[in-house]
Length: 228
Ligand code: ADP
Ligand code: ADP
Image 1 (cartoon, rainbow, N blue to C red):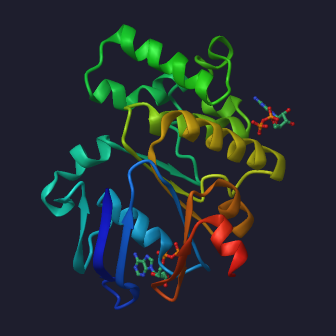
Image 2 (image 1 turned 60 degrees about the vertical axis):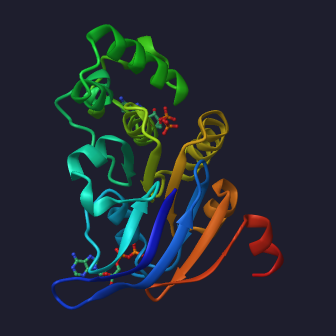
């Protein structure tokens, strides 16, 4: 579904962040990109929604080169969750979650229903949380809202960049468990970046190990545990 074909990224200052990187990601798989800090994970991820453009090579989604797709249009169909949450502080939970549905011109009632459905999905009681502001939530709760917001427009693809890394260990385990449960129901194509192997082994359908701007190994968690 998502295909990197010999992608190289050289930043303006000359830093090469990815070199001849090729990868195919299947529909409905939760693929984890893992590797040490600076190996190019975030660069690869942010190319999928065109926050970063390749210097060489191409990226296609369902066979279509994304360099020909309007970035705003593209991002409406790709959920994005980052470590630093990024909820709008002056908006309520419901307003934060319904940003994309509103952009997609869903009617008010459809937006409301979707907000409650998403709060349920991420384990937060709608009546309790819909009208709260981000500052009134714990870190774990805010990150759940971040996940809900990323899913709100019913995207096919969800990009997650160290989504749980800033959380305490217990919240982190809960969110990992919830992601596994959600994914078993939704079957989105998820690309998940982490530097934590335990997290990768726990959530991944398939793991791609990167080092020094390249893909060094790929396999299911079981395969990687057998042949580390
Ligand atoms: P990771 O996500 O694996 O930590 P990144 O993709 O963030 O790695 O970074 C890969 C390399 O590219 C690193 O050496 C990083 O310092 C460099 N880099 C990232 N963004 C920029 C930028 N905007 N300009 C220059 N170099 C960058
Ligand atoms: P999660 O498990 O989703 O991270 P919790 O509800 O367990 O969230 O909260 C984590 C910590 O944050 C708890 O000690 C909780 O009391 C505190 N907390 C939650 N909401 C608030 C709030 N609105 N203001 C201050 N502290 C809060």
